[in-house]
Length: 261
Image 1 (tube, rainbow, N blue to C red):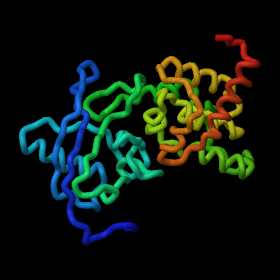
Image 2: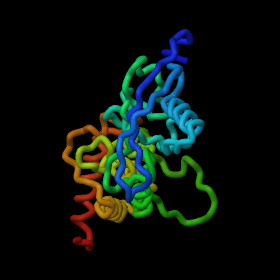
Image 3: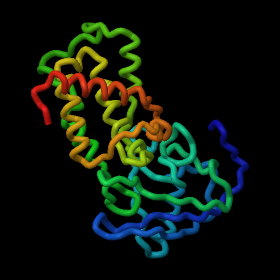
């Protein structure tokens, strides 16, 4: 494994972890000590060790979101020392290894902070707002039938590449957590760009952007102020260019729309 050191000494760490029983109860930071943490552990494996210690002590383990643990699903949404997914650029929490920290470090771990992402428990948040935005228009309607040939609709390579780059968004919500306004513009723009660039996405092009932006506003996400912290903290490198595409798509749709809301 690149950057690994099999001879690295185990670390002792202090963890300041946000504990909150549910979204209706006020939470607080609780300090924990973890010992003999291998630098080769992932951050989530370190939290597993903490939870094993808590269970042995008869205490409630820390709730946190995870699934694939391979940087694919976007579930591992943690705010680590004031950074979405932690200190390493282009890395999700599950891909972050403890060798990025030092023996004796104090690490503060919090959930995503956004009105639209209410806390379920501890570090676990409800990100179903993203699902509702996708349901509002982030899809292509097709007639049922046989599977079309992959080369039936030619797509220029530059458009295919740009659409693929936008499609790499894993919907983790790091952009929302990093933004001072808790804006979801980078996420929404990636989904809009992905489909608006492809021929298959043209039939619903105008209604898609109108409906997705309306749902985003309805969910309570903040406005974009073009600071760029969203793109800086995005673990898969979604470009700010997509927000420009979203704005252009939205203005074009509104200029020719009967929906003046």
